[in-house]
Figure 1: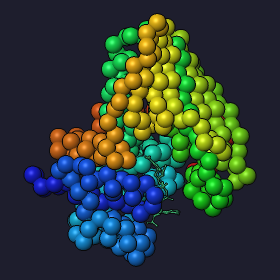
Figure 2 (figure 1 turned 135 degrees about the vertical axis):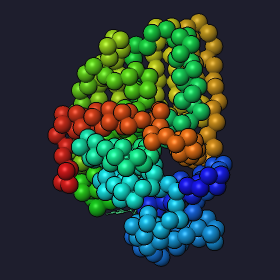
Figure 3 (figure 1 turned 90 degrees about the vertical axis):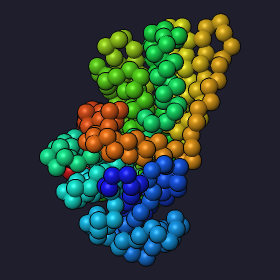
Length: 330
Ligand SMILES: NC(=O)c1ccc[n+]([C@@H]2O[C@H](COP(=O)([O-])OP(=O)(O)OC[C@H]3O[C@@H](n4cnc5c(N)ncnc54)[C@H](OP(=O)(O)O)[C@@H]3O)[C@@H](O)[C@H]2O)c1
């Protein structure tokens, strides 16, 4: 990364989320899409062509990572491959923003973090929601104490995924299942509001491929609060989050992980709606956070720190242990 020059982003894997992230780099100041890579050169070329003639296309992830053309890589492969692809970048000295779920399990996450620290290279999990203006508003309301003590949090995330056994959502070898894919968002918001649970209990039902279709979780906290969390690939659910306090409640509107608004309802008062900004798809905020960290010479982000990702993965491991979900590649 040259001092003063805009930061050159490279995208590893040209799938669905990669396209949204690439779209949103247009909102990012001081950085731009420099290169994309795919297992097939023609796919990378087609993807790159949508973002202008100067975006370089590579026919393998390795060739982009070692090209000298990128300052930071956004990893957008299926989560079962995040560990391998993160190590590829870190070992080449290239900073990484890696999609969630960060990897398959805690062992892989520990190796990724250890490598980042040994090589002194930046690494962050792409928990984009944390950087949305809506989360700053949520924390402002919570910190003001207006809703009193938080008693309960409810959050769900569900959509109806086409049942294709080989596809990422259902394929065990691509680490399919609703928990790691979208159940991570209810877990994330519960952790942001209530911290780590004292206990967590989970139950799941499964798709014919053996990965979880529906996962329900119940958590308790030292404060006395509880949370109910849910993820599914079988139905479109509200995908909201409601936080109940002793003096009122906060409702994060659908879909809560990319919301544009929050309603505060205090006892005896009319509900107040707060509109919150979301530029584009909502991915520019995390990209700007990464850029600010890189400019400041940091090796991890303060909000989505290595410890944060370690704690989220430990919860995912424990939930999978309880529901009996193991992946073939772990
Ligand atoms: N933050 C968010 O809002 C959000 C939303 C959706 C997904 N995600 C995360 O982003 C990651 C990718 O999700 P996606 O929906 O973009 O998936 P996707 O559309 O299936 O794209 C994944 C890409 O990974 C590459 N890949 C490498 N090895 C592969 C293999 N063996 N099988 C299939 N693909 C392989 C492919 O790119 P090439 O063919 O170009 O190599 C493929 O297009 C997941 O970890 C997911 O959890 C995050």
